[in-house]
Each structure stands twice: as C-alpha cells, then as structure tokens.
Length: 186
Image 1 (tube, one colour):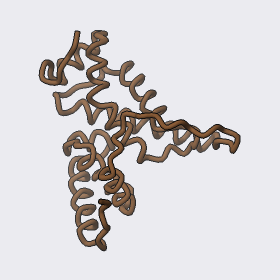
Image 2 (cartoon, rainbow, N blue to C red):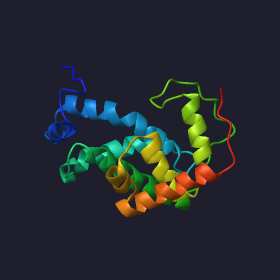
Image 3 (cartoon, rainbow, N blue to C red):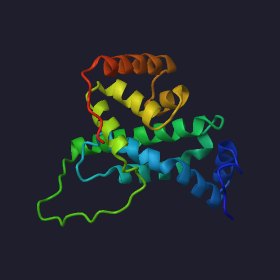
Image 4 (spheres, rainbow, N blue to C red):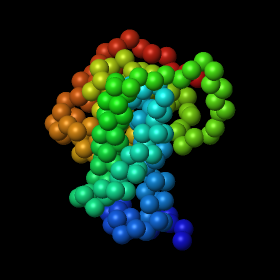
C-alpha cells in the first residue's frame, strides 16, 4: 500500500505504527529520517567511531519500543522523536567518554553514497554560520530554521521549556544579525 503525505495525519500514523503497521513506520521514517540525520550530524557524539546514522538508527529502534509512550497531536511527533534521538545521543556521548575510540589510519576511504541528508550548498552555508553561536542558540536555530520544527517540537527535542526556546531563538537571531556579514556561496 502506497501512502502519500495527505492520506494519513501524523497521529493516525503513530497509532498505526504502535499497532505494528509496517507501512505506517515506513511513512514516519520517510517523513522524518532525513531531518533527523541532518540534526544529528551537527551534534557531537564524543565517539569518532559513531556516525549520526548510527545514532538515528538507535533512536528509531528506541522509538519503536516506546511509541506507546507518545502522547500528542500531529505536530508533536517530530519533537518527541528528536527528543528520543537527543537522549540516545547523550547515552552514546557518555559511552564514548568511557570508551574512547577513533578510526585508525588503515581504514579504507569511504565511498561517497547518496544519503538522506540534503547536500545543498545553502544548507552547508547555514550550518557553518550557525556553528559560531553558543550551543543552545545553535541547536534551537537548527531545529527551528533548518529543520522546520515549531517551538513546542524544538522544546521537546532539546528537553527545554518553550520559553527557553523562544529566548534562545531571539538571542541567536540577534547575534546573527549583529555579526559581520558572511558571504553566501554562489
């Protein structure tokens, strides 16, 4: 069964996924995985051997185990999923602190593969500009301006209040506005 975005709302998909419907899981994955990996690529794991895709995969598995805990409407699922990914990332970071690993020089060079993350120059430029902000402001702006999450979804993803999200967004945008101009690539 092919599902288009307009056929089922997020809440319906979540309920069907909780009931074990594989097509609902595929649609949720299609809608959110790319943004999740982009977001995780900009969060340190503390372990060079762990890629954002690994954290995303573990987050999806955790989401599958705990989807019955999800309470909310259509706009809340992305925030809940990003919150799950944030907690998984923190656990990976803690594990990395205990067990430092780094790739060896003998590893073969990776073959470029078309991944789910957007490869646009605009996204790369935006993320490079955001890297100069403090962590919280960068994370809030990445969630809201790059990934398109709303205030509530960003708050859930980052584990902070909606007020803290609004304040960090305001401060981050002000710092970007007051910063020296950064030339956008052609």
